[in-house]
Structures are given as C-alpha cells and as structure tokens.
Length: 431
Image (cartoon, rainbow, N blue to C red; front, top):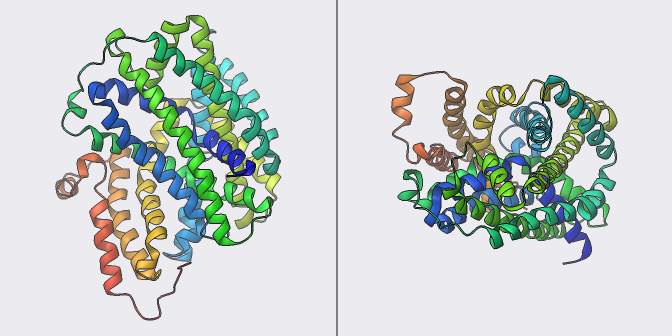
C-alpha cells in the first residue's frame, strides 16, 4: 500500500466515524457483558464490513450510487438516490451530527439554551462550508491532519480504560443471552453506515482518479485497499470503546452509550476526561458532516444545473436550519425514512457483488428490490407510528423479522423469481 492509500483510508475512517458510532459499541458492551467478544464480532460484520463493501461497490460504476439504482429502472435510480442523499445529508445525517456534537462538547461545560445551540451551529456550519468548498483539499486536510488528531484522542481514552478500569464484566442481559453474535450482527446493521457509504464511495473514487488512477480494475483494487485501512481502524476503535462499556456495568446506571462514555471519561480523568471526550465527538461529527456535504454537492451538481458551490451552500444552510430544531425532532421525523431505504440499499450493494451469477439481469434487480421495498415500507410506516394489525400479523411470520431483517428472505425470493423470468435481452451490467 502506498501513501495515498493510507491518506484516503484515514479520510474514509474519519468520514464514517460519527457520533452514532461512538455511542452504539459501549451500549453493546454493557448489555452483552461476558458475551462481549461474540457480540462485537457480529457488530463488526455489519457495522464495518457492509459499509466497506458499499464503498467498493461504487468503484464498479463510472459515476455514483445512482448507477447501481438505475439497474432497477432509471426513474427509480434518480428518486431513490436523491432520497438517500437528502436523508443522510440536510434532512438527518448532517443536522444530527452537529446537534450531537453540541450536546457532548458544549452542554457539559456551559449553561445551555436555544441561543447557545444557535451560536454553536452557526460556527460549526460556517467551518464545514469553508472546508467543503474544495473537495480535493478535503482529502488531505482530513486524511493528513484531522484523522490523526482524532485517533490520538480516541487512543488516549482507550488506553486509559485498559489501564484504569478493572471492574469485572457482568452477565449478558436477556437480549444477548441466547445469541450474542447475531444480536450484535443486528445492532451493527442499525448503525445505517451502509447508506452513508453510498455517498462516501464517490469521494474515495474521485480521490483516486485525481491521483492518476483511471482503469476500473485499479480503482476497485485501490478502493478496497483504502477500505481495509479504514476497516482496521474502525474494528480497533469499536472493540476498544465497546470494551469500555463492558467494564462500566458495575459503576452505575446509564441512559445511552454517550452517558456510558462520559461516565468512563470522568471516572478515569475527571474534568479533563469530559473535555477529551467532547473533543473526540466534535471532531468525529465535523469530519462526517464535511464528507456528507461534499458527497451531496457532487451528486446534486450532476443532476441539476446548479454549480457545486451553490449546492453545498444550499445543503449547509438547510442542515443548519434543521439542526436548530433539536435532536429529538430530527430523529422522530427522519428515522422512518432511513428504516425504509436502508434494506433497499443493502440489497443493491449485494446484487452488485453477485451480478455475475445472473449476468446483471434487470429482472433480478427488480424482483429483489420490489419485495424488499414492500417489507421495508411496512417497517418505515411502523416506525412513523402507523398501526396495521392485519399486515403486522402476516409480517411476523417472516424469518428474522424480530431482528429487523424481515426483508432478507423476500429479497432472495424476489431475486429468484426475477431470474426465472429473465429474458435473453436482459441488459448486462457485469464488469
């Protein structure tokens, strides 16, 4: 691996590593207890492996994630991909990052109010906009400077935990008692990083193109290598901060993963620990926000007549306005949309890597996505608060439904039906 691979891999690590990724592993650790290593292994497969596959999938196409969705239908491609970018961008992902950064880096040290959130987000998004204006420089800024600082801060927290936390692990909760590996697998799926990966993939591909790599074979190989660098970093960090959660079980009761980390940081380092954690969260949220603004800018520039600078200005302003509605409002409105689109994104990614088996037949894409969409639409409407007793009774018969994976078998069945009906003129997308 050369220097560029490591720089781009570090950049991708920072883009993936947002506030949500800091919060999930400690919760898994405290709940899984003595079954921690099995649980974190499952978490890593879907929380790290699937996003890396998604980034690599983008290197198979010439432009962006829309090409993957176009294999279902061009209209589906433009609508679905636009919804993905809006959801992880100005409607949810970016505003959530800024508000979480505010709650964990400002609230512990100052009296909070609507005005303080307004001031924080004003400064936050101004800097995000400035850094996002030049995507090529963003790779170097994040890959060379911000990521090492972020890693040093995380390593400091984790090393302190290994040296200073000596409480015994407790037994797993009921949730993890029977099958910790598969429960951790489902938790990693819920991080929703695979959706963000569809946006980040084109940033990685463009970064390699700017460094002179043009052939698809080399792009795929280079993207996968950068993904391995990213994956090693994510696995190390997830394993460490999850272990912190496992060792904090006997030290009190906690409301969420952020509370666990805050308590651990305070226990180990006092007020300095809270400051260190606040710095980690602020950096993680900032780099993720920059990556999402750039990804949205590059995508919407292609499908509209607006310039890149105008697009990122619109994305930044929209994110700024949404962020000031508060974290709870953002989550309540946006989570149902994410619950709906996430399984569809997963199926598209998996079809990309298996397309040689069915020669990229359009009917296979359509069958798999259609049945996946029916189940995920139900999940999204349920998350929105709609009750459908008759439909719920039928959905509960689906395998893995209780794990949030009820779409899995329908996707396979839809793909098989599509394969049986594929015509000799089905377009081929194999590479």
